[in-house]
Structures are given as structure tokens and as C-alpha cells.
Length: 355
Image 1: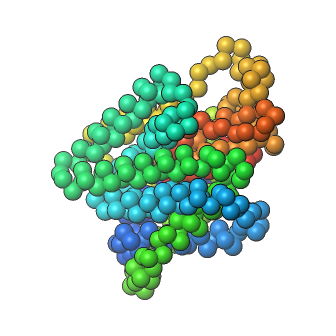
Image 2 (image 1 turned 90 degrees about the vertical axis):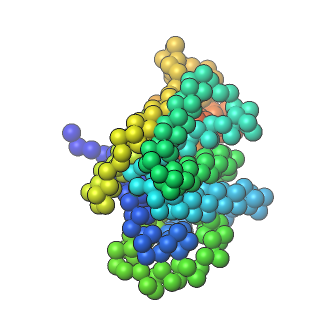
């Protein structure tokens, strides 16, 4: 059976975000934590700025700038610094397993500040995912690893804050636009690290240099575009399920590229984390077949392709959306469906994420 372009785009997205974790390990050798954090965002920002006119990216409204600033500070600036810092001692594949639990924190924030209901399934999924993260954090058996693992988990927390903060923006902008705004804002806030970045470009050997450029162009810039293309043409269920493949693919890429083999205990924790996120994203079955119920409430079910006039919400790294068909046009994203790697979606499809 011939695979569609959308399926190939989804596969490319999974590989791009999975390959980011081992690429960070290589880039750190030449740039260090500070230099790599800015260099990756700078390369991505320039690439997106060049593509923005062709992608229809609009100028944001002034009243939305505070929320854009929050998205940039959390999902871009803080996320990059924390993830890079953590990967100094945490293997790439293990880091991907920790980042995968980011949706838990989006769920908790949505419940605390937006009054979204936490179901029993979400509670169980959150507990399981956090338990898995805790298992990973102690899997290394030494203090440096454990400390770095908690730093990576902090990156997952700010990733969750980012997904939460994009919700009001995704009512008025496409996911690609929100990603561009956040990327540019995050780059601006890391400009004090410019000397470290310049030093890295001047002194890094070929492998770290190529890995850093790869990080900015492929996972951070191209990843947003191809993810938006895929989710605008595939069902939400397929798009979200595909992102569960990011950690396993990251483990394989890290093994082939860096000869990294995670400990059995870290793998157990990773399985728990992914299982917990899967429980959070699981949707209850509708008694009347879903479509009828969706018509009755004015909402589209998540296992159907989105209509062209629908609004999309959510992430990087597999967020499920809950589209409203009511006359007021208010979109509401189910934060429980945000998946780690960051990222917003096209207005015609679910959210995109990044790694």
C-alpha cells in the first residue's frame, strides 16, 4: 500500500525530534550548554524568519505580547538551557524518556488555572508518569546523573508550561505562528549568551558544528513545518499515537550514533512514563458512536480529521485538541493531550511540538 505524503511527513517529524537528543550530546562537546542553547535557537529563528512570509505568518497583536514572552521564556529559552544542561550527564535516549512526561504538567496547570476537570484516568496517568520519571532519575546510581536527571525533568516542566501558555494564543493564531513567535522571543532572551555562541562557532570541530546547525534547521525549524502539514491531513488519533514513537526512536538513534545503552531500570521508568502519558491522552468512548455526540455538543471527536475552518490547539512533541463548533468560535485544547516535545499545530489540525 502506498503511503501518503502526510504519513511520510509524520514519520519525518518523529525522526527529527528523536534525533535531537543525541545531536545535543554531540553539540555540547563544541559549544557547551550556554553556546548550544543560543546557537540552536538562532539557527532556527533565522530559518523561520526566511520562511515566514511564504508560510503566511502574521504580525502578532500587541496585547498578546506578554503571553508570547511567557512562551518564549519557558518553551524555548528555559527548555533549551535545562535540557542541554541535563544532557551533560544524562544519556540522550534517557533524556527523551524524561521529556515525554511533559503533558502531566500541562494537565496540572490547566486544572489549577483554567478549571479544567481532571478525570480519574488523568490522575492515574499522572501518578504513573511521575513515578516513571522518578525511577529514571535514580537509575544512574550516582549523584551527578541523578542531579542532571532532575534538571531534564525541570525541562519537561517548562515544556508543560509552554503548552499551557499557548492555549489562549492558539485561539487567534496558527500553531506555526505561535511557534515562530515563541522561537524568536526565546532567542531574544538568550542573547546574553552570544559570546559563548560565537566562541563555539569559531572553535568547534566539524561534528559539534554540524550537529548544532542540524538541531536548528531540522528538529527546530523543519520539524514545525512538516508536523503542521501532517496533522492537517491525518486524524488526531494517528498524529498523537505517532509521537509515542519519539522516545523509542531516540533510543535507537542514540545507540547507532553514540553507542549509548540505557540501563534496564531507566527503560522500566521510561515505559511507565509513556504508559502514564498514554492514559492521560486516552479518550473515553462515546456511547452513541462519537460523531452523534459531537454533533449534539458542537464538538468534533478527536479521531476524525479536522475541518478546514476548525481551530487547532496544543503541541511539540503530540497534543490532542478539542474543537468547539459553537457560534462564539472559542477553542479549548485539552491540556492532557499535550506531548512533550513542543510543540503547536496548524489551525487546520492538531498542535505541533518540538524537541
